[in-house]
Length: 247
Image 1 (tube, rainbow, N blue to C red):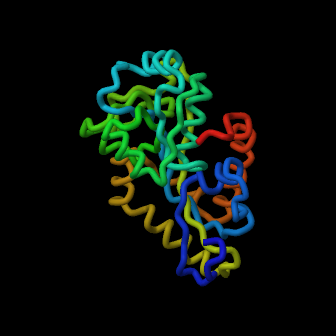
Image 2: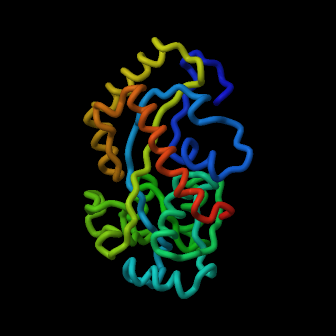
Image 3: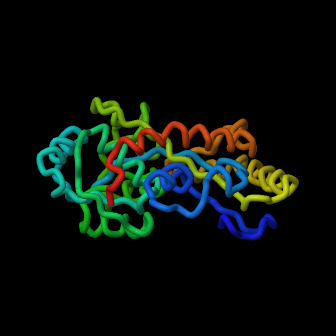
């Protein structure tokens, strides 16, 4: 994507993993998140959810953490790949809970989620929009959400704060174009994105999945650019301080 034609027809929608975590956690990454892309706008915010295989015995987050502390790397924690948003969510949870599970990397959320449902791994920290349907149907178990208030689509899932755990984060997604895409094209794409995010059907669908659209003042290319740079500055020292060789 970083070397694609800057014609406005090849676009990139990614989560925070590629632009915040990967440059810190992945050796010799081939792109610069601040230099090689033109920001268009935020597309959504989502909370992280700590989920486990449906037959995990711990009844709540505190009991779950006690189990992790006791069994250490005997517990398998999935994530969607080094530098992914779920990897960041996992690292932050492990740091907050002071646990060191065995990390199992996958090539994407779908594969990790499939193995969690199949009972091949024990737990996963992922954005709500990716796991809410499975939580609702009971194919996986949810222990906590990473916010100070419960999530409307998951009213029975407590917050980490309720268990006394300082685990708060929002996983964002956004749209980019290749570096050098003309400003008039960027502005046209940003206007189309803004219009789409105002659609009641899209807003309802995001809410049903546990996500939310960005506010109006977050949707401009300039505000998105400032937001991404602030996220890079915020997360870089956190990521450097944790287990950088986690796999």
